[in-house]
Image (cartoon, rainbow, N blue to C red; front, top):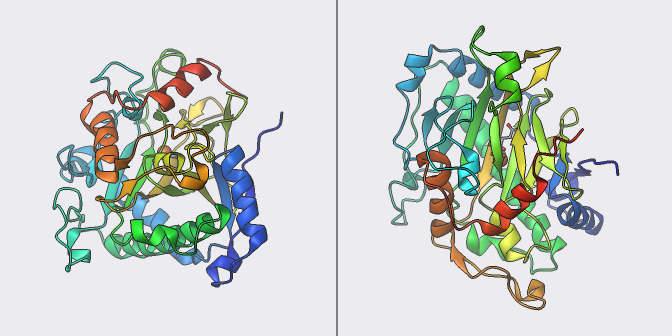
Length: 348
Ligand SMILES: O=C(O)CCC(=O)C(=O)O
Ligand SMILES: [Fe+2]
């Protein structure tokens, strides 16, 4: 079977014009793969280029300077150093405390001050940390605003694709807990034992599903990202030029009773010609309102709901405790089973 992440042009929805063909293409892609590549998203090229420049300027700083922008694990903001997170712990498939992912990241999110009329918890809607690099904050905020707009367009498409009333997701996303995680996959020169580490434990980012509603993913066209296909094999995925990747998170799998899947993905060491090449990505997580309750949609319940209702707060807290604080998540049985089923198949 050939594996491909479908490309869908969303420009009609970006213009505010619903399109049955676009919604149907999303339904097919979300049902079969759980990943989509979107074109026609309308994010201006200079905004994307400035985001890349911001990543370069921050991650180019010395490690001890970057570590100065680290927040405690419960605050999903600022810098995370290589090997201080383990995404597979969000699924509970590894012993707790084993922090092996070599990505480094910088997180920014929606602060409580963005919604002055609401009384939002300060730890979840934490203030951002901004390194004093010229243009950094402006570039990241400009991309954040564009990705937020695209995420809103996606939920409009999702409502049409699922046959829900227009605006269905608005009630769950008015103060959505959105986070942009900018990732850098690079290893200091000379530190990697290519024979030893690569055959063994070295992981760019461990296998995981994303936690929320959907993720908008900008990535360099450098190999590394792998998606677990319906054939239970890990497949390499490179975005088409100009396209953004979109993948569904766990909350969408819960809403749809797995008609749509939160697809497992991971990042292998990006090896080109026998050496590790630097790779960058930026994942915008559209996670929903902290206090929203996610229950299986009646139209998807079929013979019964596979998941009990859960608040966004409960679900995200269990996942983040795994990935950021090393506390194995015991509540992700359905996703963990899929990782273990895929076993050690390495894909193409
Ligand atoms: O680097 C990538 O392409 C994937 C990143 C990712 O899966 C994440 O940040 O959740
Ligand atoms: Fe992810």
